[in-house]
Length: 204
Length: 252
Image 1 (cartoon, each protein chain N blue to C red):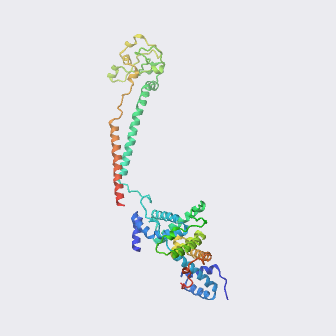
Image 2 (image 1 turned 120 degrees about the vertical axis):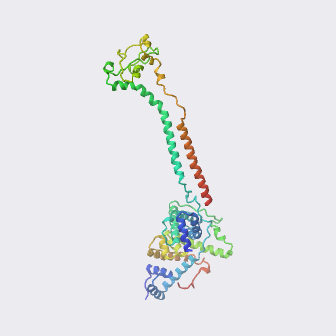
Image 3 (image 1 turned 90 degrees about the vertical axis):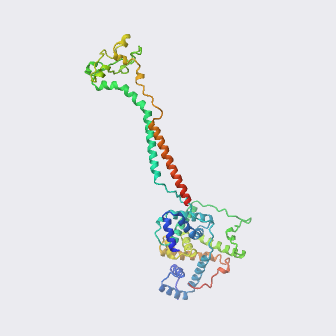
């Protein structure tokens, strides 16, 4: 796979769009999920992902080796930062569907998986809402670190490379982000399904 | 003995969770965790947070993010011959424009030159305007503009100045020009002036007919050739480009 990836990257650097599209298919889920966790909105995440891939193709000649995934994640993170800055300058009110009691209707994306039972869907929905709420409470810098390290599963070096920050900064931001998430999630702890309470998890 | 928990401890716990501590630091921290239940609690909470984050389901992508040539602003490569055709076509257009401009301006530039010639020779020859005898060999025939045309109105000297060279002198191919009249420019035309000399016969016809420029056709052969060349080169470049675009799209 690695050799294939190198070949595809080399072809893409020569302007072969089909080779790049193969890479797009391999990484689009990673990028889209990262964008969604940072932005908290599916539409914006999709736009950011598309923009990131376009930007990546246009700048692929500047890729000098290393982890291509980190390089792509850096691109999408930068696009997300730009989007967050833009949102901060021009805040918008999302048009969330609400019930007659002024409560938000569940986003249909959580109901789309046909393999889950209604109870599981509900549990998943609660968890997702809680996590996303807490993630959005973090500043973008902390959010990006925790999304890349804990959700995308990148190691510290990859996160450091993706965000172009020193390793010490990454460690520090991750620790602080986890601490804040811990405090935030304690408010939702009773709401979280028992399956996610991991008291008996073994040591690393 | 218990130590105060600092942010450095939290940072170490986070790194310990990810196996990012050195062996010695890991051993020291383990010993502290065993002694400090607060550290144990924080470690447990952080582990749960991390596990929660890792278990969050990945969203399905709403659509494929494959790029199209249009998205990335890709254009089909231009064949090498196209710029050559374009340049040649542009050059032909410029030449055509210049030829049209020249044709348009030619009547305006030639007429004033003809009218100005006597004045230039007058002043250039060092002759006094009132005394043509001063001119020596250079003969200036200064006649009223309306001579031979039956005009009776008195014209200004500048309008009446016409230079003529007698046919006999032209045949001799000698540049000797003699003054044929020394009466000055204010001489009034006489009724028998039409028959005065053969030289004057030249002036019988109105100057406006003599100086009339030759009528040119709307397009000469050079211009027609240029137009055809522009059309040929332009259409060749266009056709080559279109064929190339078709091939490029098929390849994609």
